[in-house]
Amino acid sequence: MDMGHCFFYKKETHPPVQTSKILQKIKKPYDIVFVFFWQGMLSFQTIGRLYDKLKCQFVFYCADFSPMSGGCHFIKDCQQFKTGCGCCPAFGSLNPNDFTHWNVMYRKRIYAKVKPIVMANTYMIESFMKKSYLLKDQKLQYASILLDLDRFRPQDKEKLYAHFDIPKWKKYIISFGCQSLTDERKGMSYLLKALDILYQSINEEKRSQILLLFIGNNGIQIEHQLKFDYKNLGYLPISELPNFYSVSTLFLCASVNDAGPSMLCQSIACGTPLVAFEMGAALDILRGYNTGYCAKLRDSKDLAKGVLSILDLDEEKYQKMRVNCRDMAAKKCSKEALVNKVLEFIK
Image (tube, rainbow, N blue to C red; front, side, top):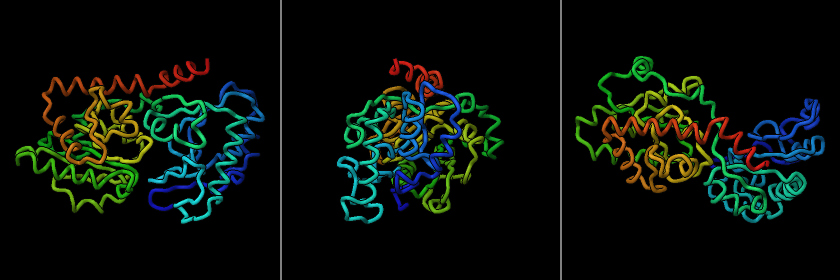
C-alpha cells in the first residue's frame, strides 16, 4: 500500500482465506448471498466457487472501490478502472498486462457467471461504476450505508460534557476525525484552511466558545495548526463514537475522495448535523435535506461558510435540523431500509 492506494491481496486465485475453508462452513442453501466487505477473507475466486455451490442471487454492497478495479480498494486519482487496469500506479507498473489487468479479466468472467446486483451510493455509481470497465454493464442499485441505529443514537449531551471533560462555557463543539488524520483522501488541508477562515470571520467572544474535538491517528501532527481550543481524543473504540457525535454541535468532514465516509451516516444517526463536501455519502444524506451544509468540493471558503451557518442557527432551527438528521438516518441507513431496498429489486 502507498498513500492513496490499498491492496489487501494481489491475485484473485490467492485469497486471504482459502476458499475451501469458507465452503466447508456453508451447510445449507440460501436465497441471497450478501457481500459487504472483501478485506481479509474474500477474492473473486471465492465468489465464483460460492456461486457454483449455492446457485443463488449475489448482492455486492460497495464500501470502497474494489469491485470495479483490479484489486485496489482506494484508487487515489487513477483512471485505469475505466479501461481494465494495467500499468498500475500503486506499484509503478508500466506493463498494460500486469497482475491488475489479469485480475480484471478474471473478475469479468466471474461477473458474467454470477450476475450480482451491485449496491452503492449515488456518488459511487454516477462518478465511477457507470464508467468502470467491469461494472458499466452490471445491475447497479442505489443504497446508503447500513447502520445499527440502536447503537448510533442521540445521547445525553449534558452528561457527555463531563464524560469528555469539556468546560461548560464551550457552547459550540466542532468535531472531526478519521482513521488517519494525515490521509490525503480525507482532505485535512482543506479542513484546516476552513477552520482558519472561520477563526478570522468571527469575534473573540465566539472564538472562546468554540472547542475542536477530534479523533484519529496522527492527530499530534496537526495540533500546531489549530487556532481554536482543541481536545485530541486520539483513537476511540466504536462504543465511544455515539458519545463523540452526540456531544458535538456539528461534524465537519473534508473528504475529497471517499466512498462514504461512514462517519457521515453515524453522525446524523446521533442527531448531529454535518458540514461536508459534495461527494460520497453527502450526496444522498446531506445535499438538500436540511441535515447540515453541503459545500463545493475542495472549496475551504464554502466549507467554513457551512460551519458558520450552523453555528448561527437559532435554537429552534438547530433542533429541527437535529430531528431531520435522525429521521434521515432512519430513512436511508436502517436495517428496514436496506431490507426493503433489497426486496424491491430482487422482486
